[in-house]
Amino acid sequence: MFSAREAWAHGGEGVGPGAGWTAWNWDPLLLGCLALGSGLYARGLLALWERGGDGRGISHARAGAYGAGLLALFVALVSPVDAISAELSSMHMVQHMVLMMVAAPLLVLGAPGFVLLWALPAQTRRALIPWFRKVETWNSPWYLLWQPVVLWTLFAVALWIWHVPPLYQAALRIRWVHDFQHLAFLGTAFLFWRVLFDPLCRLRLSRGLGVLYLFTTSLHAGALGVFLALSPRVWYVDYEATAPFWRLTALEDQQLAGYLMWMPGCVVYAIAAAVLFSAWLREPAR
Image (cartoon, rainbow, N blue to C red; front, side, top):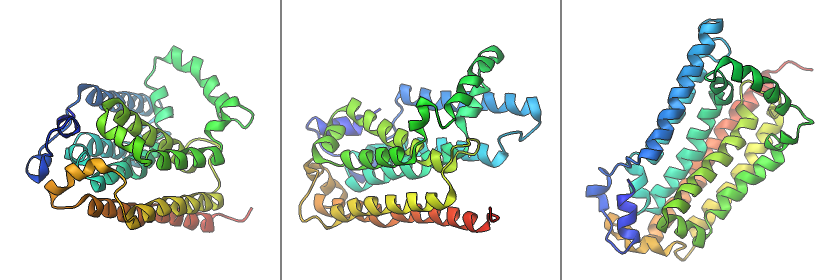
């Protein structure tokens, strides 16, 4: 459960290192969603492979990427990372980075939409396939879910707006706001990475434009990290009550969070851009 978060948000004391590293979030709804996501994917994958042979459509590597994405969600939302994020801005940053830069792209690589379609009964699947094919066309009203400028903007807005102090502190104090914050981060990140790495869709961004897409994202994300790291004042005053339990001042904790977003965070975009650039160079001239 959210015991550590709720304890200090309602006037209690922080748990500190001793209890923080043993606090797990066994929320039944969260665990049920993770179990459902893994169970349906496994069912769809088995049906797909039984139909056309092991590895048909979705390779073992892509299936493994989806599993790794679920594991990343477990680490971010169930492990003590979640409880400690209620007390340290730096750990909250780590949690958000795992959601947006690790879990989301790994889930995308597993092509969950395609696989989950195979988890449905055959009659339902046949009825939905034409709709899915229509969605993945340039003239579909759903094209906005593939439009790179729109997705880039959604990702940027989610990242910046949830770091505005009133919204950020509301997420610390109110459980449903906290849950919505995580859904916003994961959802916009999934759409952001899908336009780059979806293995089956025909609407993927070209690799050359993908490098620019990632580079510009690293610029604005890095700028937010710089603002956090170099600010002379504390943005999130709620951490003033809990950071000292970890032998940090709230400002030191905030600076660490900013450096994490500024440097390791931007390295993720740089690595992804390098992979795309390398693949772009290997493409035959057209």
